[in-house]
Amino acid sequence: MAAGAGFAADSVLPDCVPPETTVVFGVSLRSLLNSPVLKSFQSDMQKMSADLLKGGRLPVLEIGKAGPLPGFDPFQDVDDLIVASTAEKGKATALIVLHGRFDPKRFPGTSTSYNGVSIFGDGKKANGALALLDQSTAIVGDLAQVHAAIDRRGTPSQVKPALAEKVRSMAGRFDFWGVGDLHEGFQPPGGTADGFNSVDHFEFGAALRQGLEVTGEIHARTPKDADKMAESMKLIEAMLKAQPSSAKGTKVDLQSANGTIKLSIVVSEEDLKKGIEAQKSSLSTAMNSRVQVTGGPPAAAFKPPVKPTPRPQIVKDDHGDTVRVTLPGGH
Image (tube, rainbow, N blue to C red; front, side):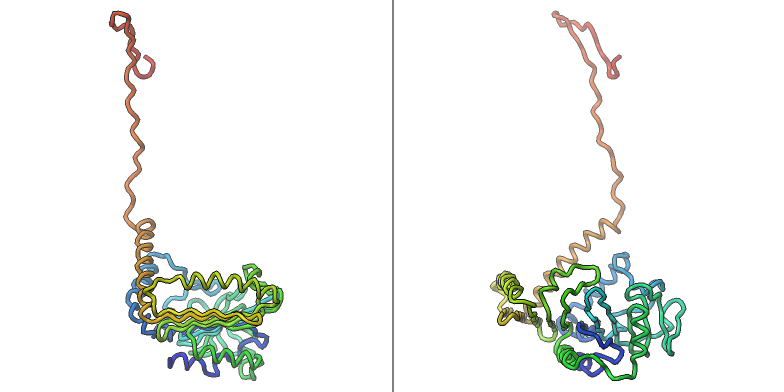
């Protein structure tokens, strides 16, 4: 909870965030890792992660053409991060801000300098440049966004006060959260806008502090969109409530009024641990099966089926005497 409170300080939306920001997502890795629920499974999670990394089955973090970041461990070096986006029609941009501990000596390749700030990476691709504002703050984005963020340092934030206040509230309560207003016609990068055009505002949060708490709220753009979403949410509610009778510590609440749909899920620590154990068992089984296929001992050499040896054809006369024998091959 202390980690969450620290994340809720004024630095949640630093002055480098674009003033046109309308959508913000945040994750408090330190709060999640300090969760009593996850701590009880920390050794198992670390072992799974090590096995995946050893087998080359996890993607490597890359910044532009700089290649992998040796010695960079996001679970140790990063405390929290936010993603701020303008969510504009056809030209949405995003800037990632990370808080933690960063040592420029551990980053590969050479760096360039812009207004006294070291920048690593290509910058020609989306999220291709990483800049170290100081030893505890790094930003990631395309080169133009990174330059603009550096230029904004030391100036009053131009982000809408209502959004900044909502972000501060969500960050103080949740470990993983998001809030924002979507412009009509918003097109997410690399995806379709079918699920976004019907929503003009959303917010959600999840916390793993005493069990699991999940809350979400969306507002439909039109009454017709609200009716469609209400019907879909009824199906989701029925699925969530179709839980085992043993899960007595799980509560689901769904409300819909005036175009706004609110969903709340609370899972007790006991029920959550049971669910994690079940998922961990399934994941372990799947990983073991994959290791046997991709990294296990070589399979036995393929042996083609043995064809039966043709028998000679024997022709006899009416008295039972052999008059002709045809050997395999027609001889």
